[in-house]
Length: 182
Image 1 (cartoon, helix red, strand yellow):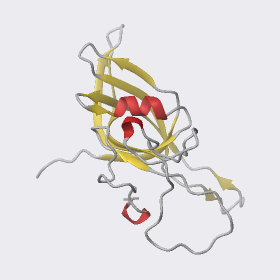
Image 2 (image 1 turned 180 degrees about the vertical axis):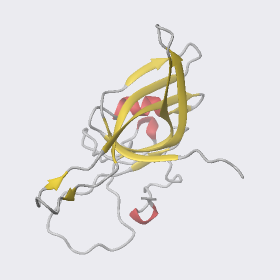
Image 3 (image 1 turned 90 degrees about the vertical axis):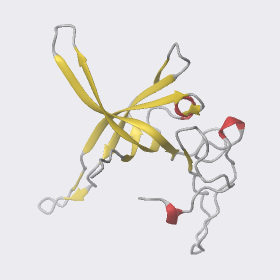
Image 4 (image 1 turned 135 degrees about the horizontal axis):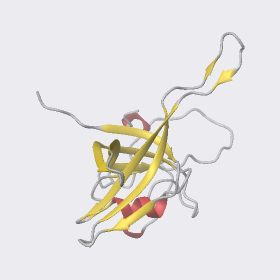
């Protein structure tokens, strides 16, 4: 039987991105991600709402050859940004200065989707032109929505795969809500 190493997360950055460029021309962007894995719940005894639990995960995003995910992350993400990530687990091992063996699991990103609205007037995702290949127009839903009172348009979500290109299949629209796997 084959093994599977696939991680899908939605969370918020716990710190600004730290990046490093390699002599080979590659680049890595590193940051922490906070992921809530239990929802808030009401305590039946006190009637008060209690917060869920949060996991903190170290994340690495790389530029390699024609893949520009580290550049995209560095350009678009900051502490507090919400992002959807797909990647794989990697065990990082090292020896401390006093000779102790240490290890930790981290996630290496293969795909990402920006979930916050853009601050430059466009909508969420990497759209708005440039080398990202997206569109800054609001997404139109493929299914009719019930009439609502005047509300701000929902942020656009755009996915980027490990080669830094818009992962929506080359069209102008990102996937509909029905196609999102969560």
